Image (cartoon, rainbow, N blue to C red; front, top):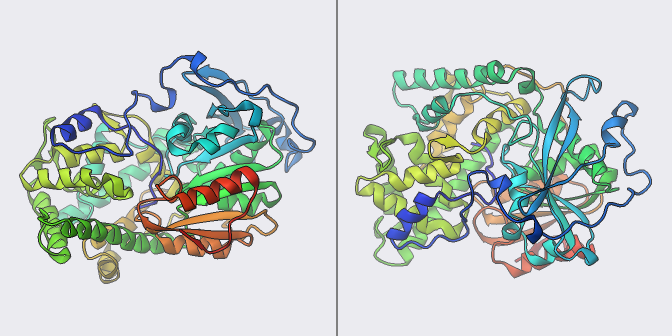
Length: 526
């Protein structure tokens, strides 16, 4: 598993109907159109962007002379719904800037108060693989008014994602099968099936995406970010990155330290870890979140999972085993198989406010109906009405495997069970089997590995949440130690990321930093 997006995503209308019928309030998840990055709306209703001004001297200077055409390009913004859209041209391969190019999708929501506008705040919601244009388009939900009043919020779909030359690895039918398959095989036949699917996934990326599959690394996306900064006319990058977006930001600080402006890295990734170390610590993070969920249920009295935390966790484990043995029916005619049940289980753990969704999913499954858990799994994978709204489920695979192609041989996976089950008694084996994930992916990045320190960068604010399931708090502590200029802000609580999560102390510290340049005290706990 890899850190998943913090983006505000589209909640399926049918899910709202099902949960509404059960009397479950849906908090923090909003409805939207089929294409959330390009919602319909009146262009007249949107704030007008400030008229373009010549970029400050040096803002468009390229790091290498042959990149000058990219750094000097002017963006042509056009109204798209209540926002503005444009494309940014970048080289497919930065080692060959005169060769093939790709276009990146951009979306801008102008500052609500143009007279007080500070500049362009580039945002990324994570993934890797989540379309940043969606995040920006819903900036009014992801960011509070003090931010949206004074910044043009600019989102970009990183290369290989969304509408920016998206990688393609599987057909929708094949992806359905992959996501539904058993993530913790317990027979030789199931192991063989897992290996076949992983291999087909990796081979499919090359067959269906060609040369692009080898050029969607984090480092290349970060080089794109500096081209975007120049095209926006900003001498320094003003940036808010969440989840994997923190890895983009930290890498930017290493490659372009003198271009770092005010930068917030929320839900931080420890960029020093191997893929195995990330998986092990993330397994522990989801176990912590799941335990907190069950504790809350038990504390409320009359918990449908049992009278104690251990009883509740055992009931969930037994339910997963039952679904593995016999998939559950759902209202749309599909069967809830164990892979989808796993994604349905972890999706609501990203935010405490969404625990009622997990109640509904588990209660339904315990009664023999997999509908709600299946809808939550679809929600995780951006699947709606039989199709995928974006390629995030494929992009996360290609980007992670290009960044770190390490893969544990199948025969060695059982040797990992003890460590992973210690970290997560409930989900440990699923995370252990995930270590084979890059076995079939052959492209290799030409970018050399980085030791990320960001020496010479302006102060960077790293934010961590103590019971964050997807990016464990220890990752925020580690990244704050690794970045030379970082300060750490801690949110005590549940859920993924810390800003705009109901904690005024965190929100005000981040807003004072982004708006007024007031750097929070290192070690601030909220």
